Image (cartoon, rainbow, N blue to C red; front, top):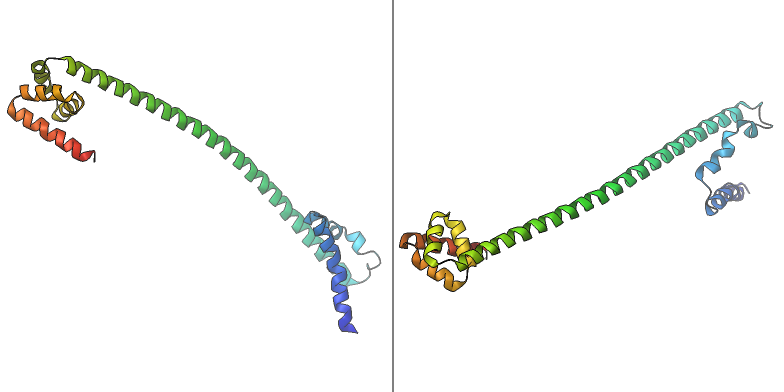
Length: 180
């Protein structure tokens, strides 16, 4: 008979908890009744074990309540930090877009300047262009020669002295190998 009573008692104690969880009550609502010591001790005030148990339950309920408050405060801190991080991320993305557009604008401007420079060398007489290119750094002169019209580049190289022409040709070949 005693063995049949234990499962019944377990169900009697577990059923309210299961109902509370099914109804989506807050955990602190389950312990609210425990916090009221007067209700727990009604009719049992003269039993020291009951008073001690009620005190222990009250202390546990208070600790749980403080823990739940700390969790709520932590959740609020996390939500605030998350919102701050989202705002910062949006700000950084907009700055990144601005930097990217400025970089693209600068690259386009440089490209336009180079195209104008190439057009100038295309229009120059080969001897004049050769005299100027001979005084430029070899890598820069090779870059210009790579971009001018092939016929114009050939006439310019032909007008440069042979040692300088060999150096420019080697630079042009090195540039081609690097770009692969």
